[in-house]
Length: 165
Ligand SMILES: *[C@@H]1O[C@H](CO)[C@@H](O)[C@H](O)[C@H]1NC(C)=O
Ligand SMILES: *[C@@H]1O[C@H](CO)[C@@H](O)[C@H](O)[C@H]1NC(C)=O
Image (cartoon, rainbow, N blue to C red):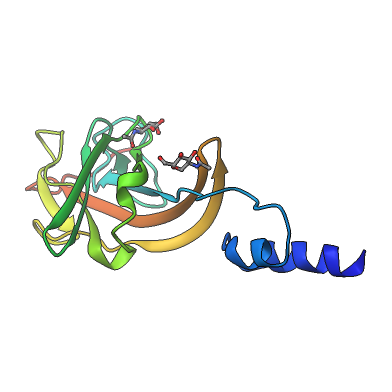
């Protein structure tokens, strides 16, 4: 039985490549595991003016900011939007249509701030996207998802105001 468990281990550690296991007469685990992509990030306003101000960051989370995952590879392109929650957090999840892309083909954009008083893009610079950094694999009902981070997006008011607390 040792070879059996070894094969199982190999199959698992190979990372979802089922071909090897099939060749050894093992039942094919799952036909084509469909990888999807999830990208998370947080949008901040460098100001104490808004709800949920975090003193250590000297910033407030921005809810309802639209975040765009944009991937391009040759003439194939993918755009998926989502918006931030009250903690400024967003998660953009693709379907299987992410297959032709790797993280290097993709960037995340927060093109404008939803807060009138906080419109200056500080990070990343104006209209520049953020690159994706791999974080972990998560198991979802439909298959595996590679989770990436786009980091933080920071806007600021035109004029910094003092905070009194
Ligand atoms: C949008 O965000 C919500 C909450 O995080 C998530 O459940 C949903 O899957 C996301 N939709 C897309 C298209 O990424
Ligand atoms: C992957 O996608 C194929 C084709 O859309 C589908 O038939 C199959 O059930 C999916 N596999 C998983 C594990 O979701």
